[in-house]
Image 1 (cartoon, rainbow, N blue to C red):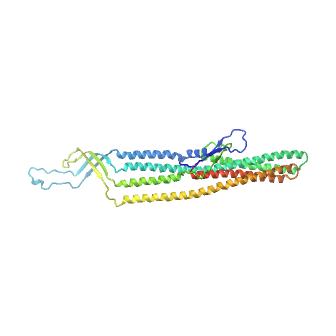
Image 2 (cartoon, rainbow, N blue to C red):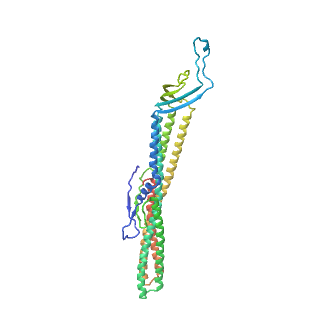
Length: 425
């Protein structure tokens, strides 16, 4: 694969909370590799290799002598007769039998086949490369499926982390408010509001946990990796440079298909080349070569032959033209693919720019929301605002934090999608 420019793929741990115990970490590119290597399509590579080997052996047999055992019996209603034989004194008129028994062993050896065997082998090699590349195209499509479910899990993972931070904040405020209630500095209703919000947050965490486990199970089935509810996904951080270039599997397939048709055109042109061969026949029959002798006898015949189709009514020419038309069809498919790919890359690059700008704005918004929430905490503890007003500000900060992390993940997803579409990864 040709690449210009540099790409740095740095895998970073993307954890939901500070981990008290060691947890399994799975990386995106491990998922790509495992999904491709364990998919049933991957076995087709070996199967196509076996098929190619068998077909090449069959083509090589063309240069081996053919050995056939043939037998036949015939009866004919008329035989050759010598006229006026009775007019020749002392000449006995021979009688030809009406029946014929023959058992022969025929051997034929090709001396020159017009390059048919060599061209057939080249076509078989080309056909194998096309079939193998088709498998690569199918397997490469798994990357997009893995990307989709992988980043969905990352989003759930980050939502869980952010909401747990909110739950920790609520628990801290509850401790302070319970102390205030004992000292009769706050109302019981304010404490109830915080408890209700805490229960709501726990419910959100439970829903996210269920969705995450389901998504992890799907990822495990897709990649055949051992993924559990404790598995943590790593966020791949990539850099996109305009100078990056690579060949997509589909583009390589188009090129190989054109070469395959070139091999077919060359083979078709060899159909009208002369073919030379030698042969021999060992036989036993009645009559043998001397059909006037009505007896079983052995015999043999040796010789050489030539076959040359000097005129086929332009059939070969039309076949070659048809194959050339199919080449043009593939070229138009390649042009259409390149055009659609260019449009997709433009859209994905626009997404990258969009999320980059969104992350910058989200950071500013979160900074301001943190200051507002911090001020609300002081006001709540001093009885200036109610618990409901405090929760409103805390929810706003939580939403800002979630939005920032979502945009960060979407930015990396857009970059990975761009690199995947371009064929870099």
